[in-house]
Every structure is written in C-alpha cells, then in structure tokens.
Image (cartoon, rainbow, N blue to C red; front, side, top):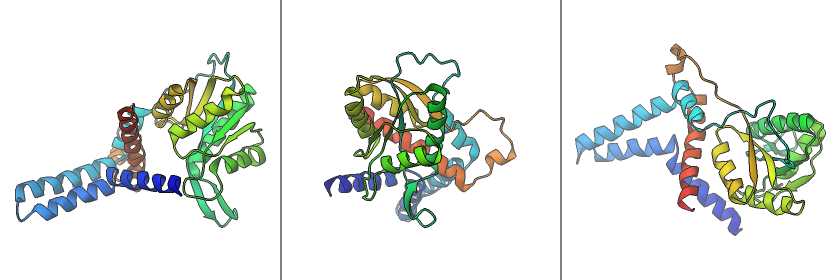
Length: 252
C-alpha cells in the first residue's frame, strides 16, 4: 500500500511539472492575474501559448529527443565480458480486452523487440525488469511471456519488484551479482538511456548502451512547424526525462 501511494504521489507531482498540465496552469495563473497585474497576466498567458505551440511541433519534439538520446549500439561493438541483456519495462496496456488482461504497452514492445534481436545476435541471457506499482501482474512477468511465447527468445531472470528506473537498477544488480555479472547490455529507449545508464552505473554495473527508437536528424519542412498530438506526447516524454535527471542529480 505504501509503495502504491509513493508511486501515485510521484506521478501526481510529475503531472504538474510536465506538458500539457504545467502549461495549462501557467495560462490559468495568467488569467487569474489579468485584473490585478495585467502585464504579468498577459505575459504568462502568452508564454503558455508559445510553449504549447512549440512543444507540439515535430521540430521541437525531435530536437528534445536528439538532445537526450545516446548513440546506437555499433554492429561491431566489443561485447567481451558482457554477461547479460537487461531490458527495462515501459508501462502496461491495462485491461486489454483482446488479450484478456494487462499486457505490455507500445513503448515496452519496442524495447522487447530490440532485446530479442540482440539476444539472437549475441546469445546472451536476458533479464527483464518491471514491477506493479499500481497493482496487478508485475510488468516483468508479461515481458517474459512476450519474449518467450511471441518473440521466441528465452528469459533467464525476472525482476518484478521495482517501481522506477532507479529500483530497476537496484533489483537487477541484486539478481546479477549472484551470477558474478557486472557488465551488461542495457535496453531502453534512446531518450531514456542517459538517466537509465546513470542509475545502473550507480549500482556498480558497467553499462553498454543499447538504445532503441532514435530520432534521426531531419531537414525542417513545412509539417515540422505544424502542431500535432504525437509531437506533444514526445515532448512530454523528453521533459519527463529532463525532470528525472534533475531529480536524480538532486538526490545524489
């Protein structure tokens, strides 16, 4: 119960710091100040609108992703000494009627697909990590099922008690230390890799980044400046990572 409340509180606070809610609150504050301090009120409203527009454009969303993302794993990367592939969970598709219950969401599937390709290429064993902070089946368990039953690769270890990236790292270290494994291939999204890699290195792992879903450089075109919901979502993911990096740094 305590774990669930902590997870809920963390996500509730994060919602106030991320688009679109933070921008809505900024503009609401401007409206509230219009009568008493009209210049400040108008400035807040204008700032909220400008930021909402900018973060909703593919140009800005892609730039934020490229600011965060790591380099792709080279095809000829030196993997000597690597003992495992660690795959981070990314969330669930809850109460999926076509699957008869919870399953991995689209982001998690992207990570699992790349992990399966790496396992076939390297033969390394896989550890999946992801708990159930809001109840239900731990994410690690259905990640294992998808890899084995749908993608046809074995999973040796399941860490299913973690609620966030930092706990993913601690739980994975606890499992792999028993196997004398300290060097890993870490699979997560390219824009999540800086925070994830730092968290895993903090526990004593030597980490080789194996990111997926990159945002390649693009020449700006007309549609790069046209707002769309997908770009705003991407900007929210990027802002979430920036807030997370600052929070991890503040906690040491």
